[in-house]
Image (cartoon, rainbow, N blue to C red; front, side, top):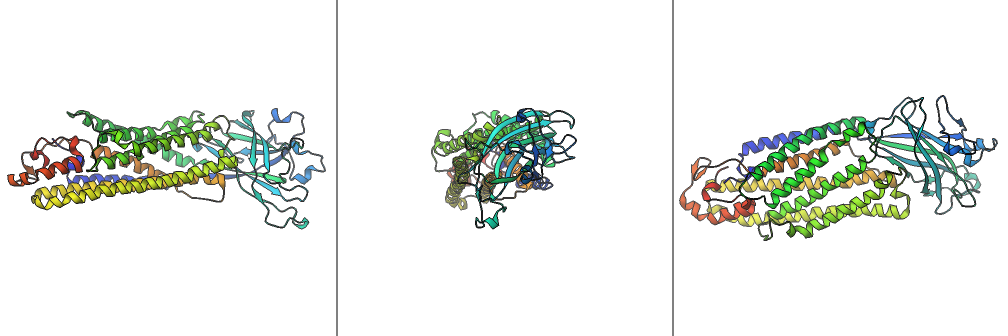
Length: 543
């Protein structure tokens, strides 16, 4: 009975397959390099005046256009006009004039920057907190009425420093304040958005007291580039049927065998299912539907794939360790797979604590409190450290496998030349695949850490990591090609070989007897081909 394709395919054909996969990997990097993944747009709020009694629930104040609000240039102008702080509304229209938002932008993330001037009689007190009354509305036509989307009281803790001496001559200079997370929306289903921000003052309740003199409010809006979204959707649309077809073909070959599937075959199939799950381009529906949960759903899909991929690498290496006696049983890997499952569950809880709440309150952020910030930072650091330790452990497992192989290779010189060359070729193929696995693991660890830092750097300030879209598309393509290669190479081969043939040469009977034990060890343990039962020594020859 023949073994896996990686054992029986000719070297020439394997090189052709490897070359084709390499070309697709290069293409995956190149298509992502055409355009950046995100864009950042700066918005300066306009100070509008609303002197109605119940103004905050009945009227939307536009910063510009035919129905623009009554504006003031600065806070000093409000004093002679007897305008109170509660009557000032900071208005921001999204996007900028003569532009429209698009569903291709996929999401909107906003950070907030306060311009606070130093005043001797109005300094920022310790642990000061600014409380904002924020209303968000949308419309799809410039002449249509605004529809309220969200209205929340948004508290944010100020972290500001004043580098100059606090003397009268330095009054009017600005504090240096950290940026604040403001809002995140998981879809961009409408063309125009409007933010009305109020800073209500209540001295009795100590609301917005001791926060300094706020001169302006600036926002930075971050959204996915429409061009990158189209490239991303096109990749998913192409890769979904490709991986699905190979997965079905692989499992059909497994089930047509006379024995039940073994553990390695099952986890390869499970990896193919998780890859197909993350590939399915459900994002196409976000172009026509206002599905704000798409970001959360995408995180869940990616988390499932991470858990499956990390677990697969442990099992993949473990099943090829010849000195292990508990192979082909998932229970034998509970010490390694268990922590991966627990870590994935913690990742899910962390994501639900922020993006889950944002489904009903887009202004919520776990980064707004000291405890939340410390927990979020600790999560990113611990996750990065754990992944690095995982990679080192994986390297140790691969080293053990290679050491065991080296020990068994001492029997090769006793074999005939043809048979020795055959097994030397199989060992080289296996080692090469192991090194490719390590390279994929290293790139995955780097991708996870960099993506977490990139997503979080807007929220803690001071750290900036620029990531080209080629990195995202390249890693995504690498995952698909790796899963494709595994299902293809580890599928049962259809070849059957003639009696005592090895590349057209007949093996002497004495040579076969001398190496019977070694063939059994190598063929069943080294390459895990106990899943392909050996009828006799004659079928183990030939590439």
